[in-house]
Amino acid sequence: MRKSRAAQLSGDFIHAENLVSSVNSSPSDFGLNQLERGRLQFLATNWSASQTNFERAYEEVQAQDEAAKLQISLGIKKAGAIVSNDNAIPYSIPRYEQSMLHSYQALNYVYQNNMEGALVEIRRANLVQERALKENSTALNDAQTDMNKQGLSSEALNAAYPSMNNIISDLKNGFQNAYTFYLSGLLWEAEGEPNSAYIDYKRALEIFPNNTYLQQDVQRLAVFLGMSDDVASLERRFGDYTKTRASNTGQVVILFEQGVVNPKDEVKINLPISGTTKSGRGGRSYNSVGSVKFFSFALPVYRDHLTEKKSLVTSINGVTYQSEEIIQVQSLAAKNLQDQLPSLVTRQVLRLIAKEQIRQEMSKKNDLANIITSVYNLASENADTRSWSSLPNNVQILKVELPVGEHQLQLSILGKQELVTVKINPNRITLINLKSIGSYTGHQHVNL
Image: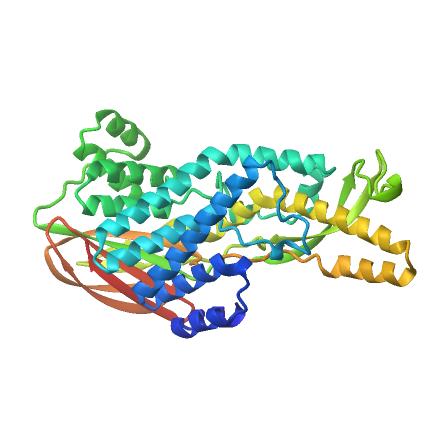
């Protein structure tokens, strides 16, 4: 993906997508391949092609979900674990990537004037997060228990594994996505469904409470809907809401995507494994009761720094406005990886046991076989660093109320100027999707 990423950073999205297509795409990478192609086609404004690839990725998610249900019903907890390394296992699209998939698919429909299709995607995105919220605690506990059963403690893992705390910050989980909830609120409001919009704006505010645009939207709709208890609670948190919407005005909402998410890296660490696991014939054990043996693990990691983000600035009628962050994709990715670590380590322990058993059996034949097996065991264990690598690093929002009519917005991004001409309709939302990726700056806008 390096060449594709370089093309994306230069703004050549068609070439970047062609480079993805040329990557040797094994069945285990099919879903990820569709995500990368769909995102780059979206950036190239090829909405219909992007829609097709995202739909294929969604079908892959559904197929994986059905396979997981079958494994659980059959009591198979470690299907696919004993392989050369995790890269041989089909790429499982994590929840945060699924919600981003549906967000971009919703925008594909919006740009093709299909609001019904967009709302279907928004419902799917919200359902992904609701399910993840229900399943998360149980899944984390099960993974932790499985890892402990294999003789590895969480303390040992945390001590050896590089910290990602600076990236994760105070995120509670790796799947709740304020950007998706905010986009959902916008689309519901555009459809004249203020109650549904209010629910999703509130969900976004729970995740990003310091975003003043979110605060204002939630307070505005709470007042409009007559939610007196909510109004009082919100005023205690954010102060009195005194704004009144002027007549003959509309709203401009800018979704500002910045940069490209950092890829995963590989780290190799030594971890102590203790236990009573037996290895094959004769009852020999590679790890006797109470003993501790160190093994080398290859794990994915995000290096512990965030790419510096810059705000979008615009001046309208003498008033300056500045964008505010609604999602840090890098943080979600790192938190998701942190939550996956116990499962990743458990699979590696099982592989190490299997490989050690094979090595011991081969050592009975001759020294050469023993050496070859040992070399294979070391060389074959590589970290799975796959992820949806063409996603933005962060997304910010900016919202302004303007008089009806045509307006020119002078947008300033990292010293670059982008001139956007928009038409404001009464009591309607004009949506601008602005991208700043490497040397590229561009936008699309649509009246909702």
